[in-house]
Length: 162
Image (cartoon, rainbow, N blue to C red):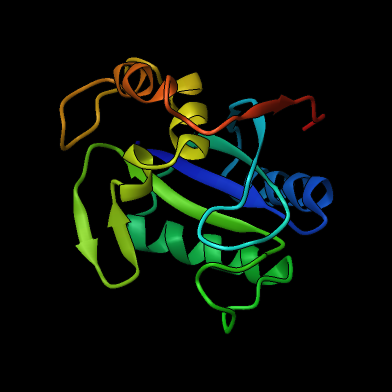
Protein backbone atom coordinates (compact mmCIF):
# COMPACT_ATOMS: atom_id res chain seq x y z
CA UNK A 1 0.00 0.00 0.00
CA UNK A 2 1.20 3.52 -0.69
CA UNK A 3 2.71 5.44 2.21
CA UNK A 4 1.13 8.83 2.85
CA UNK A 5 2.71 11.70 4.80
CA UNK A 6 0.59 14.62 5.95
CA UNK A 7 1.61 17.91 7.53
CA UNK A 8 -0.71 18.98 10.35
CA UNK A 9 -0.82 22.53 11.66
CA UNK A 10 -3.00 24.80 13.78
CA UNK A 11 -2.73 28.25 15.31
CA UNK A 12 -6.29 28.65 16.64
CA UNK A 13 -7.26 26.54 19.65
CA UNK A 14 -4.10 24.68 18.71
CA UNK A 15 -3.92 21.75 21.12
CA UNK A 16 -7.61 20.90 20.81
CA UNK A 17 -7.62 21.09 17.02
CA UNK A 18 -4.42 19.03 16.68
CA UNK A 19 -5.89 16.33 18.94
CA UNK A 20 -9.17 16.35 16.99
CA UNK A 21 -7.33 16.13 13.66
CA UNK A 22 -5.20 13.19 14.83
CA UNK A 23 -8.34 11.43 16.12
CA UNK A 24 -10.09 12.02 12.78
CA UNK A 25 -7.07 10.72 10.84
CA UNK A 26 -7.01 7.57 12.98
CA UNK A 27 -10.74 7.04 12.47
CA UNK A 28 -10.42 7.46 8.70
CA UNK A 29 -7.07 5.79 8.00
CA UNK A 30 -6.35 3.49 10.96
CA UNK A 31 -2.89 3.19 12.45
CA UNK A 32 -0.77 6.32 12.02
CA UNK A 33 2.75 7.27 13.03
CA UNK A 34 3.28 10.73 14.50
CA UNK A 35 6.32 12.98 14.70
CA UNK A 36 6.94 15.18 17.71
CA UNK A 37 4.86 18.36 17.83
CA UNK A 38 6.65 21.68 17.29
CA UNK A 39 5.73 25.24 18.15
CA UNK A 40 6.77 27.66 15.43
CA UNK A 41 6.11 31.23 14.33
CA UNK A 42 3.52 31.91 11.64
CA UNK A 43 5.03 32.20 8.16
CA UNK A 44 3.73 34.64 5.56
CA UNK A 45 1.53 36.66 7.92
CA UNK A 46 1.40 38.12 11.43
CA UNK A 47 -0.42 35.66 13.62
CA UNK A 48 -0.22 33.39 16.61
CA UNK A 49 2.35 30.62 16.65
CA UNK A 50 1.44 27.31 15.07
CA UNK A 51 1.71 23.80 16.39
CA UNK A 52 2.98 21.50 13.62
CA UNK A 53 3.67 17.81 13.20
CA UNK A 54 3.73 15.15 10.50
CA UNK A 55 1.70 11.94 10.43
CA UNK A 56 2.21 8.94 8.18
CA UNK A 57 0.01 5.99 7.32
CA UNK A 58 -0.56 3.47 4.56
CA UNK A 59 -3.67 3.73 2.40
CA UNK A 60 -5.03 1.95 -0.66
CA UNK A 61 -6.78 5.18 -1.68
CA UNK A 62 -5.40 7.29 -4.52
CA UNK A 63 -3.84 10.68 -3.74
CA UNK A 64 -6.89 12.67 -4.87
CA UNK A 65 -9.20 10.69 -2.57
CA UNK A 66 -6.79 11.13 0.36
CA UNK A 67 -6.70 14.91 -0.22
CA UNK A 68 -10.50 14.97 -0.38
CA UNK A 69 -10.64 13.15 2.96
CA UNK A 70 -8.23 15.74 4.42
CA UNK A 71 -10.54 18.54 3.24
CA UNK A 72 -13.53 16.82 4.84
CA UNK A 73 -11.64 16.59 8.14
CA UNK A 74 -10.56 20.25 7.92
CA UNK A 75 -14.10 21.37 7.14
CA UNK A 76 -15.44 19.37 10.08
CA UNK A 77 -12.94 21.11 12.37
CA UNK A 78 -13.94 24.62 11.30
CA UNK A 79 -11.59 25.41 8.41
CA UNK A 80 -12.88 28.40 6.40
CA UNK A 81 -11.75 28.04 2.78
CA UNK A 82 -12.73 31.63 2.00
CA UNK A 83 -9.88 33.05 4.08
CA UNK A 84 -6.62 34.08 2.40
CA UNK A 85 -3.93 31.40 1.96
CA UNK A 86 -1.78 33.01 4.64
CA UNK A 87 -4.13 33.44 7.59
CA UNK A 88 -4.81 31.96 11.00
CA UNK A 89 -6.60 28.63 10.85
CA UNK A 90 -7.97 26.03 13.24
CA UNK A 91 -6.47 23.18 11.22
CA UNK A 92 -4.39 22.61 8.12
CA UNK A 93 -3.82 19.13 6.64
CA UNK A 94 -1.39 19.12 3.71
CA UNK A 95 -0.43 16.01 1.79
CA UNK A 96 3.37 16.05 1.71
CA UNK A 97 4.18 12.72 0.10
CA UNK A 98 2.26 9.89 -1.48
CA UNK A 99 4.69 7.04 -1.91
CA UNK A 100 7.31 8.29 -4.37
CA UNK A 101 4.99 9.87 -6.91
CA UNK A 102 5.49 13.31 -8.37
CA UNK A 103 2.15 14.97 -9.05
CA UNK A 104 1.42 18.55 -10.07
CA UNK A 105 -2.21 19.31 -10.70
CA UNK A 106 -4.65 21.96 -9.45
CA UNK A 107 -4.82 21.71 -5.67
CA UNK A 108 -2.35 18.84 -5.35
CA UNK A 109 1.43 19.18 -5.50
CA UNK A 110 3.37 16.09 -4.45
CA UNK A 111 5.94 16.24 -3.07
CA UNK A 112 4.76 19.41 -1.40
CA UNK A 113 7.24 22.23 -2.19
CA UNK A 114 7.17 23.47 1.43
CA UNK A 115 9.06 20.36 2.51
CA UNK A 116 12.34 21.88 1.33
CA UNK A 117 11.48 25.46 2.37
CA UNK A 118 9.89 25.40 5.83
CA UNK A 119 11.60 24.00 8.90
CA UNK A 120 8.23 23.29 10.53
CA UNK A 121 7.54 20.81 7.70
CA UNK A 122 10.99 19.33 7.12
CA UNK A 123 11.98 18.77 10.76
CA UNK A 124 8.98 16.61 11.75
CA UNK A 125 9.14 14.79 8.41
CA UNK A 126 12.77 13.88 8.97
CA UNK A 127 11.89 12.84 12.52
CA UNK A 128 9.68 10.01 11.24
CA UNK A 129 11.30 9.32 7.86
CA UNK A 130 14.96 10.35 8.10
CA UNK A 131 16.26 7.92 5.49
CA UNK A 132 13.36 8.26 3.07
CA UNK A 133 14.46 9.91 -0.18
CA UNK A 134 12.83 13.00 -1.61
CA UNK A 135 11.39 11.87 -4.98
CA UNK A 136 12.83 14.86 -6.84
CA UNK A 137 16.19 15.49 -5.19
CA UNK A 138 17.08 11.88 -4.37
CA UNK A 139 18.44 13.03 -0.99
CA UNK A 140 17.24 11.83 2.40
CA UNK A 141 15.13 14.06 4.61
CA UNK A 142 17.84 13.79 7.27
CA UNK A 143 20.31 15.20 4.76
CA UNK A 144 17.94 18.01 3.80
CA UNK A 145 17.39 18.83 7.49
CA UNK A 146 21.13 18.83 8.17
CA UNK A 147 21.56 21.40 5.38
CA UNK A 148 18.69 23.57 6.70
CA UNK A 149 19.07 23.25 10.48
CA UNK A 150 21.82 25.81 11.11
CA UNK A 151 19.78 28.63 9.54
CA UNK A 152 16.30 27.37 10.39
CA UNK A 153 13.87 29.41 12.49
CA UNK A 154 13.51 28.22 16.07
CA UNK A 155 11.25 25.20 16.58
CA UNK A 156 10.32 24.24 20.11
CA UNK A 157 9.28 20.65 20.70
CA UNK A 158 6.04 20.52 22.68
CA UNK A 159 4.85 17.60 24.79
CA UNK A 160 1.30 16.89 23.65
CA UNK A 161 -0.58 13.69 24.41
CA UNK A 162 -1.88 12.36 21.12
